[in-house]
Length: 563
Image (tube, rainbow, N blue to C red):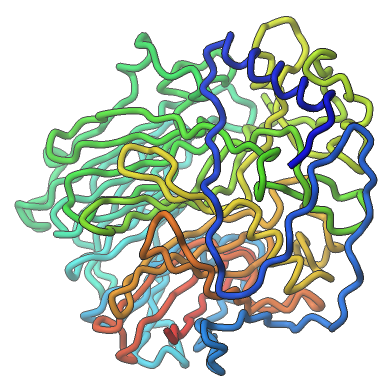
């Protein structure tokens, strides 16, 4: 790849600046593997005076439910809609997180609109039936998470006040409440260890709207080894980040809230547990980091920065503008903050690997906001001698960025442009080191499959989300089918599901893209938020399933998996 001298000089200067400021170099994406379907060729790196041309008009009309070809051009789609249940409540998180109990064949779905845990009969997944809705109001103001294991169900319920402790409520599969214990502020995701003996909750501890109350994030561990009938608060351990307040942490971990301590700024989002049940990995989304938890020792063992994605590297392009006249996936001098939401763990060759959906998230409150656009930044003239070109709305000007990160030398101008999320999914090793990243595959596949609705949201025009995290990878789950491990990644804005074979963590293969959303009418399953993979031996059909909670449409859908 050839660079003009001015751009090469720019890259050298940026590297020197970052090194001088002790900021880790951006994480480099691994080379992308061959995919099951042909991928478009990458666009060229922009020169000092780029010409921006929209891609060619599509030659065929997009289908309402785009589905990728399976390997070998098999006639049956890898993912196929099997059944759906509609709450009838849209735009209110009426179906957000799901769990499944194989013994009862019940599905559990959080309904934040009604503050209920909805229990559905899934004996016939093509005809889901609501059995009952369990009222969570006696335990708090908002149900956020649910998990099921070994015939026990756990629900996370937040309190009305931002800094008040939430509750973890335990039920049997038929909806009878068995016990409840106190968690930290704003419990979000809840999960079990594989043996069902420990429950973990990610207590997000978000501030209130005007930022006058900013509780500490924390992690709750609940010991169930004594049986649910004897469960009490004495069996609960609250893990705090307070020890890091006065300790040195990696400067790449983002601590930037107004007058915030480290413990206040770390907001646990999602948890994955290793297959041996010894280690938990907790996403700290806004901080762009992971917390590693030693479950047996009941302690936070490490904080790990996830680094940054270099969007100027080959196969790491992005469409950065909603005002550029079409689909323009290209390289730019931008570092993407991975900022994953969901995380899942899987095993390959005896080693633990992590999969993240790199959504991205900013702090944007009435009382404080870090959000701005590149056009509104004062760019360092040495780092960005072509600032005027870059800040044009058809280039980088419209891209959402941050005021909290980027001024590495403290002189009041921005030395590095950052973006929220990486528009990808990533595989990490058990130490949090990057193994592989999907690069710009998501945007390229969407451009190829549904160009008329590329980076759209709802009834918006195509390209409307290009300035703001693109399709926005949100949900992730993994599952083993016939000895092969698959990752399922949901796009919150594009309402689609990507499937990759990750059996070889260093060379995943794209398998399928599917959606049950009709973008022309904005109908169907919209904004997948929570995934649950069901293995064939646990499935009511005898074949593997993917259960999906769709936040915006308020629907719960079941997908058949046809490997």
